Length: 278
Length: 165
Image (tube, rainbow over all chains, first blue to last red):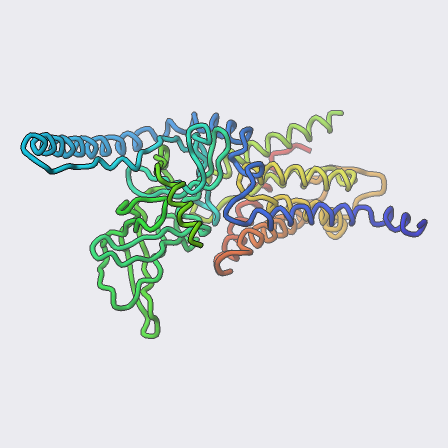
């Protein structure tokens, strides 16, 4: 017993060192998955509120580009209003004269959120936004902005959420070519925040540089047809079965200030149904 | 007492600078220098080792919580806090009874530069290997380690130059 005690005293610093390193390493391993604990992430409310203070300053530098984006979006929304107006006219007309019935498709609406922390220079990039559980957010919701797909919500606290953007290799987003519906996952390769890779496109598929890559609608997070990027470069080796495709992402992550979270009202119903089959 | 306050102030300022300034540097897509470890470097040579390990743990944990990297900074920072004394003994000979803060003046230019370079390289290597460890290939990690270490070393030496005696 005395010897053991002497041993502990003699090597106390090494033992303390090993203990601390084991704690740190177990945190690395434990939180390596898709879902992190809220405490150790920037959705923790102390961290997040400090980020929102610093962001309220930084925000001013990006006002101009944000304004441009909003103006473009405004025009698109106006166009949609005109289209919908036409549909209403058709509907009223058909009500007057006969049988055609159009069910309005109200499955989806958008929740507006502000980006309060964002990185592009790391391997594992994350975005923190200022909406959380009390605003109706939950993990796996899709996130977009006016340019296209941004990422997927991973962690939600009461007032804040962490979004995993496309430029983080932890997620891949199911996508397809807009013109012929061949689908494959888009994943980031860790090099350049402007480009990602589109995988699993077989040799026989026909496409060219400049083709649009959109969401496939096979996941609950995104409806079909949201723009992810455009094909920037592709090549295929003699021996390969699949193309090596580089996609230029539509979203500029460096100037990201506002996003919209997609609220799919049938999310839990679809999830339960799919779970019951598994 | 002055030493105590000085170190607390340094602790807070380095964390704020790291999180709100340096984590936002976006040079070449790879560069994200980590200079918060300057706190560990600047502790007096004979500072209590258990306490310096605990401080390193807390410092790493705070940086981790702000940058969504659970455990990674903590691991790397505790590692250099532990290796600091052997490295100091390797490069310098401190007089018996003296307890200087590491700097150009107390270590000599060569000794201090070697001390900083060795520990920054160890810290960055540990951190970037942990970051990549369960993901895609190894290729760019080496570039990340070298580029980031270079920038961190330059910044840390620059800050140390500003310090008077």
